[in-house]
Length: 149
Image 1: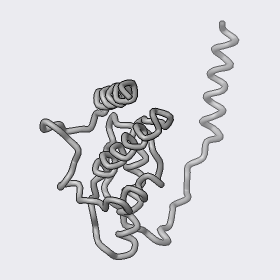
Image 2: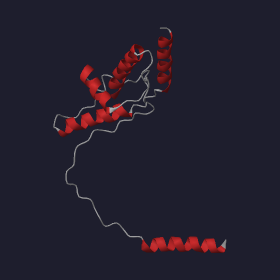
Image 3: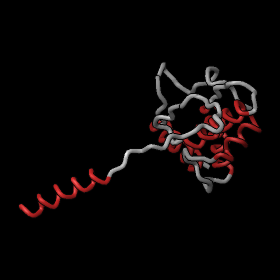
């Protein structure tokens, strides 16, 4: 036990003796403006949040102004499309909360987009998104539709 204590003490002393202070400072070459960070909370919709954030950043970069676009509008429209495709394929298509950047672009192209204050996706004065219950209900509902065909 005494040897182990000596080894640990020697290790800490050697680490502190050879540690170096960082003298490097970063120089900003070009600073791009950014939008505020949004909280997807418990939704499994990172694909929509990241895709919409990219679009907002591109609008800023191109000098079009600052926008706060609705991630949940994209999610809602995407769920509607997934539900229709799920029924048309008699359940042989994935009906789940996930998605991709391509879904953001396709939904934007088909339906457009609205500002976040026009469609937040929050209900009953909620302060954060939580799709746990909604995902379960939608999944059961869609399976029920397919089962009744």
